[in-house]
Length: 477
Image (cartoon, rainbow, N blue to C red):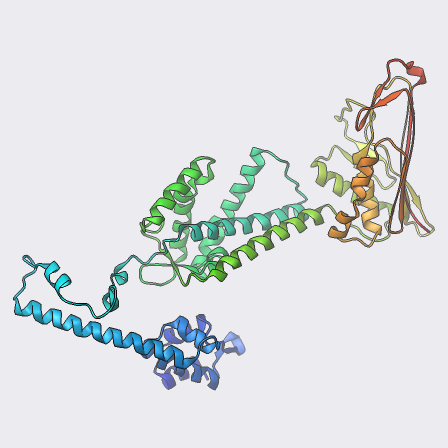
């Protein structure tokens, strides 16, 4: 049946039906043009809700009953006790009204204490006439609200990091500038995305996890323009424009105001959050979501360091792997490898030590696929300092071993191939990983090992100094 037919059958308004659907009590099917189609079961469910709501049962209680978490008889017994307390409260209020009228009380001379203190209350505390109903419609839970926003910003950060590393191939270096750049990229995303979410859903992912919703004074969702103004005010007065140190001051001011149940600057005109419940599982949901984002970021970092081309490689594919990884790791394009394994350097590149990166000598099979990569360094004579070329060796291993082996980003990290290469230094070694063998042979005379560097021994004549290194990665036949 259509929603109009359902309105006529149940005597409910369309707004009632949409609200109960939004709260998850019913889930109508979708027909042509995405129109909702309500079943007889939906109608019966709404009838039950109508009855229980008219008996005064809270929505959360009805939901527990519907999901089998609470017996209907128990819920009705609780409500019956509540109604009895309310009836006693109403009778008490009636007696107070009678006493005040008998005393011909006037507002200007009203002795409120006389009536509050001398008459016995039938319920403990404030009872049915609780002043909690007069409290501001806000959620004074500063830590939940803080971590909800933190989770939103962390989400934006994780998505931007994955996009930057995997698509744009941007690997930001450490430093204050790039930290601030990342922060403002997240804030910029917040200024665009949050108004859309608040004006359509009424919450962001972080607020949803903590059960927070943003509503205007009438209880409805914000318009997009209101949500936009609210988010900008929050960025300015809640986040302190993202300015270091100053933002900590703004956090403190917001915390104090929120703890004192005061409206924050962006809530006075543009809506404030309300909270659905305080169940502990929402905090566990936050922990799970944060852990998932950490894992996503970790996987993005690991995957970004994997070669683009996998399996048996042509020389062009191997060179493409090398160039991609070299650019990603160094964020430099000062040299490019061609399909022959030769580094082509830009004219303005100057090598302070050594002669630059060694070329990669490629061995091909009959099908023109790479089966081995060899790096050599042969120095003699006057060069007093040379490095162990660890970066170039690891780059070759990433581009070839990680490509031909049956690796994913996690199994490659666990293989420790790059660590073994770094620890090899100037020593002879052999590494067996899967079907690939990595070997290094080194011969040197007249040099002293200084941890990653060889320095010429001044006691040895320059013409007797010699350094020969051969590093080979070979696929077993």
